[in-house]
Structure formats: structure tokens, C-alpha cells
Image 1 (cartoon, rainbow, N blue to C red):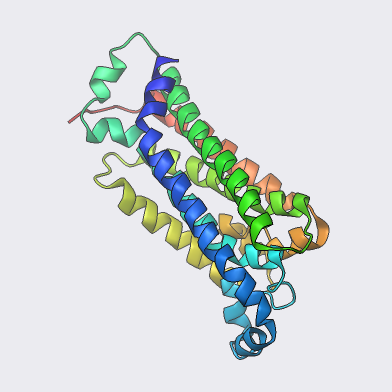
Image 2 (cartoon, helix red, strand yellow; image 1 turned 90 degrees about the vertical axis):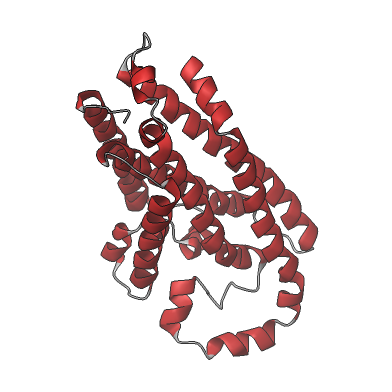
Length: 265
């Protein structure tokens, strides 16, 4: 419990910054929606000039783009990207922070097991993501209802918003195992940005094809916003795949961490 509270306090500043940043990005996009929807015909003609593959890579669907939920789906492309960086940062710093700051030996001399150390740190990172998403969702609902007078499905809005949380969980797990495998990580942000953007571009390339198998290569494509808007649900195969990735990555992290040599210097 002490490790959990300590880590939660250590993550407090970054959690606030990321939460405010995500809300600011959402507010920026939504502030453009009224004028965007007003000139829908002109924007549609302009976007039709772009190649279909490029529109798919950017998450632009001309059939739904000029509705509040369709526009939000497009904005989520960038919001989820930022959320993934936050999660990857948290996951990568779980163990590497102790090595980098030369406090690993001190921590492991305490009357706690390595499993307890890992659990406390993981629980704090998970709590930070939950706090971020709860506050973000509350703010997003408030802002969305202010910028549009049209009725929209709150269920679909929440389902779209929760995709960020699920993607974050996957990147938290990936970051966690990277933190355990890589002996010394000098810059968490560099590793996080490199990993997240690599998966983002893989997902963008996968979106240009009709091959669903390629979607499994990137967590960013596990949730198809168009499918959510059409069926008001997620695709079960990708939900299962995401859960398997999280479970395997977390389990492997625990196993490797309990067996590896930890050096503070």
C-alpha cells in the first residue's frame, strides 16, 4: 500500500498534465465542429480530392464526418495517440525509473517481495489512467453537449471515448515488459515516442488495406470507430486479442522481474 500511494503521488503531476492536455485537444477539435458542419458541402468536396487510402489512414469517413460522433471519431485518432504516449510512459518507467535513479537496491532491501513492488507500481499506473479517463470523459460529455444542438447517442459517445482507455492498457502492458527487459533506459520519453509512433504508422498502413489480419499488428486499429458507430459495440475478436496481449505482457513482466538481477548503478 505504501508503494502504491508513493507511486500515485509521484505520478500526480504527469497525470494532471496529461489529463488537461487531452481535454484541451478535445476542446480544440470540438470548437471547430460548428463551422466545420456549417460548411460541410465545401469541406466534403475538398476531402473527396484526397486519395481514399490517405483518408482511411487518417480515419476520415465522409459519410459520418460531419456529424458530432463522426467528427469525434476523427479527433480520437489524435487524442488516443496522445493517451497511448501517456500509458507507455507510465509502463516504461515502472522499473526503469528505479534503475535510472539508482534506488533499485534501496527499494529491494525493504521488507517487501518483488511481486509486491511490481503490483504496487502497476496499480498506481492503472489508477492514474483511470483518473485521467474519468475526468476526460466527464469533460468531453460536457463540451460535446455545448457545441452541438443535435441529438447524439450517448452510448456510442462513451464507447468511442473508452477506446482510449483500452488502448492505454495495452501500451501500459507493453511499456511494462520493455521496462523489465531493457537493462537501462536513459530516456523513457524517447522509448515511448518511438514505440507508440511505430505502432501508429503500422496501424495507418493497415488501414489502407481491407485485410483485417493486419489490424492485429497495431493496438490503434483494434477499435474501428466506424464499426462502433454502426453497431454500438466493439469487435469481439479484437477485444479478446487485446486482453491476451495485456495478460501475457503483464505475466511475463512479473516472471522476468522476479528472476532478473537488478543493478542500481
